[in-house]
Image (cartoon, rainbow, N blue to C red; front, side, top):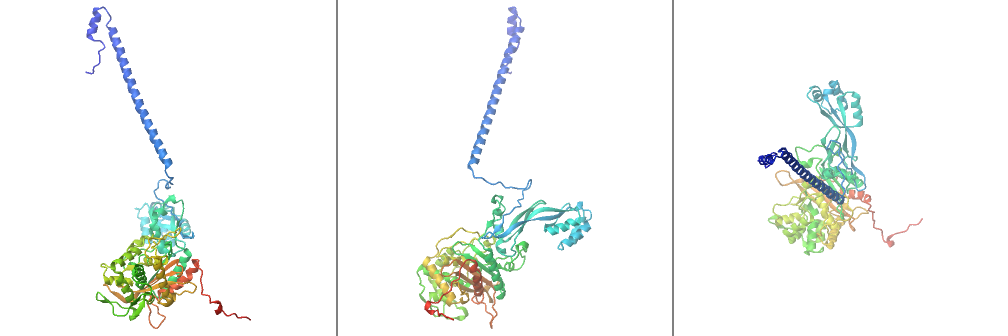
Length: 597
């Protein structure tokens, strides 16, 4: 039952007939009423739909208005521009030095690929390609061109304009070219360990993604590929001219001292900027070699000795023990300590280089003569806990954090148990291994008045000091001791005319790769310095791996004979490039004799 009233209700029809009325009038009246009810329902339904539609439009306009307001209040953001239908971002920002000189850039080139099924003379094409690219495999080319299975194949990922023209002259329609950009390092091997290198990532025939594979290229890969940079280059802290001079001197010194490897770090002691950093042997990032699959990683030219290489840095660490003892008030520069033998710690005898006996020495004398026993006694007064805390605050417990992917592998090697014997040996640079960059940062803290700095490869806008790790007074006293090492101690070859240098030598026996123990005839020789000594601006560390100086009657391996002369030559070359004017001692007026013609 749907509740509808019948058009001809029986009761009303019978009643109408009794009264003599026409029953059809009843049907017409009921039909009119039914139609009016249907129109009313349709009108109500239509009005409801219009109301709902109006509400939908109102809500849409409110949402759009709110979104427009939010966009108006937000920061403008550059959209990522990509090739139509492609997700490959082919552009990459340049890398420049602190003077804006190009270290890495992009060059437009072409790739060569083949459609073997479109080739007319595949055998001739293979023969002609071998003339242009002798490094290709002829048998493989012939097989790929003729087996009928391959529709597409790469022949060369990048070719020169001359090679492109030569391939074009072959006249083979199945050989095709695709535009792309390649990474170019115009200075060749210069700063190779800093830059690292780049290669192709995702590839298409119309473009290829250039991605960083090592060094600064990989560390800042996302930033360098971000179109929002608007073409702005990545500005590094290094100076190209100083870097070139550093590498030239280090290479010559490495050959002269018959060393297996070498590293150098030049650091601004106030900003933490790395002005130059070199590692030898090196490589050309334009033709980056493959990582080694056997042997020691340190033997590969890809290995960054300045950052990845962790070594026992020998007596260069002695100044840290002296500085901490001064800062704790345990000693003064003129405090006398007896360095005479014997000295035993935990049953182990503590000796001196070549069996020397320096007798009673002041703290200054201990650093000047590089006494192991004297430094060890200072360290025992400090104690293991305080020594650990100081070296940790100096940054010798963690990687340096410099902007290189390889830096994470340069974590210092610490003793499993920090005993009293560890405290003594670490005070003179044995039992704790760190990188040359760690050492340069440590000496920078002495040079800048006692502030820890964080080494960086990015250009800075001014000094960036970290926490105070020693007082300014102690830092100045430590710098004075380092100056005495050059004027009256083991680093006399570092007395560069016109430039006052302060520093400390370190000669550490090289540990064996297997079986434990140390080589008797292999050392790591290091000279860590700051200059100018009276107003330090730079810290320089030079490290040689297995050096041997052979000009005398017997081979000499100590840092005073190997690393120091190399560092002295380096300072003499780079100091003028850094804008440091030489200062010479001028005799007093009464000592000058006038000569007249």
